[in-house]
Image 1: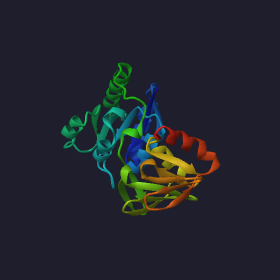
Image 2: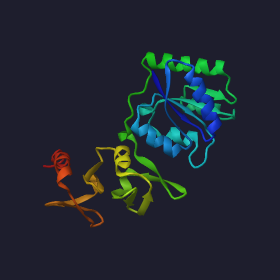
Image 3: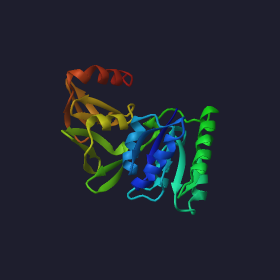
Image 4: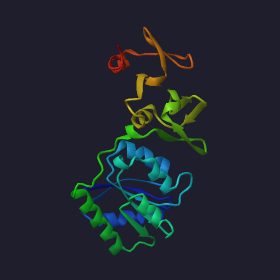
Length: 238
């Protein structure tokens, strides 16, 4: 079974793809969404093997999304669009196929067979591993902000929100700590408290049950996270 993600800002386009996939036994709709920001979360939390991707979308378009993913760690991609002018761009991005809307079922079936062949012949990308990325997109209010990992100092959980403190300021986003923890690379960030995730590279000092990060912020280390934190620090200690 091939796990698929459907991304299109038009609900009717998603419905059509979902209907087509329902007719093909080896395809399965794992998730569907209408924005690239949602898609990034889904890609980080699920083993998506095949991404059906619209190109022209608000905030982050399909091409920007593909460029933000590491080539070695992204799913197979099929562009689904009403525009022909992106075909060369799609070729340069090494996408599996390029489907023009309205998409006939016979053409879709050929794409599905192409995906099955590619995956069964060792061309499937490895499972999702976001550790090779060096930035994330964060949705805050009505904006989507690109934030480099190296600029993040720490993250604070505030009920249903997270506040991300960076070298240039802070960003409030409607994301749970669990979601943010999964998105961030584990070798660079560690959770030390129910309400705090810190950047390992921004630690200035560890003192008893506290960590001091480079803006002189003192952050508590809770007992439930202490062992994991110490094991990470031990590997980098002389």
